[in-house]
Image (cartoon, rainbow, N blue to C red):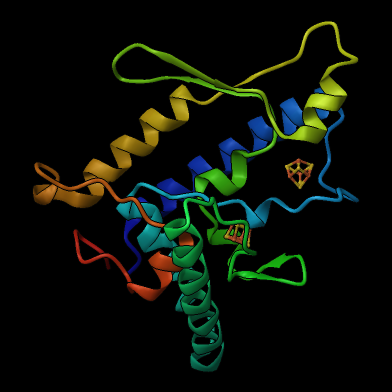
Length: 196
Ligand code: SF4
Ligand code: SF4
């Protein structure tokens, strides 16, 4: 039986996408035809539940496909570590991107779903953090009187609640995840919690 928290996470992901589409629609932003591809952006991800859910998607692929993706993830890590050692921020295509298509689209992580439009959130210490959106979004926004902003705070709070529930009795003292998608793949599923 699947962990019921995965169902809640998938519902939260849909809500994020709906909000993203709403804001992107107001700005007129679409990734279609964009000369950039944000799947080569260097991001770390921070929750065990998203990591575990990503692996649920991996396990739906054949063993051969999983090996192929793990090989690409290993190459990504080698290249990115070499760049980081030189003080450079990697720009390497995500190992899950195959000719523009995400191989775990239904299981991709929060940041993959919300990057692009202007967004903002309030940290637990009360400080507001804001991002202006991608270059294309900023170009489109310069023609608007008022640029809409995606408010992420509620989504972060709900994801944090799911993370605590996922870790269960291990949630106290649980260390924060700081992993790229490639590392989440090569490391295998997270060992915490009530994964079913
Ligand atoms: S988020 Fe922006 S920069 Fe990234 S692919 Fe979409 S339109 Fe292009
Ligand atoms: S997981 Fe999918 S959507 Fe996210 S960066 Fe990788 S290929 Fe792109």
